[in-house]
Image 1 (cartoon, rainbow, N blue to C red):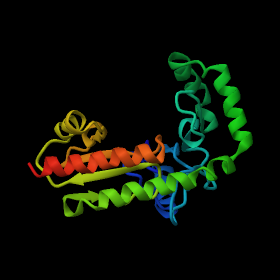
Image 2: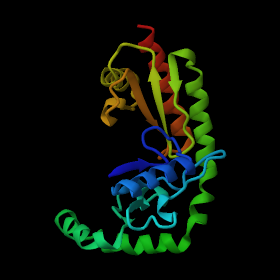
Image 3: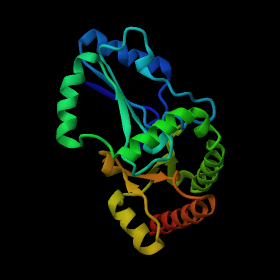
Image 4: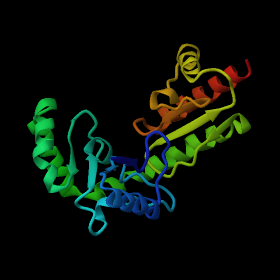
Length: 227
């Protein structure tokens, strides 16, 4: 299988429709599945648009689409999501599901139905405050200048930073926690071993808390890079 995650965690990248169509067609030609993780489907900014490869004509037989209420409707910890799969995989997936978790809690299922009935509009009207928070974080990170490269992030609620230092990412994270009381995720947690990279999340806090957190983060990074 080929897996795509768009909008992406940890980078925040949103893959263009043309690229996802190419991947999906390649999978069709070679007889492999295209697994499309779309947990952050409603979190896009500026001109970026989410595209679901499962909507392509003729893609139903080889495309597996994954969705999560935890992100799209803010239902973290309710443990409910869904997938759209080729019909011939249904029995096999049921066998796997039975050995992991037979079903989400019943109350979560009812809440999920309510979310689907509320629809996308429920989410969209709540994105504006998140967009403002995103700009706040991006502005603060940009202030680090050449010492910090911020990957383009048009979706989700993460920024991936590449810092100009020889210090391993995990060591940097430990120092940020101990000395500045702010946490980030080392890039190594995502298999990113090339240089010192951090994933910064801004999606689950109020604006004031984010401002405090990113202030500590920037101060801490400057202190560590200064030696």
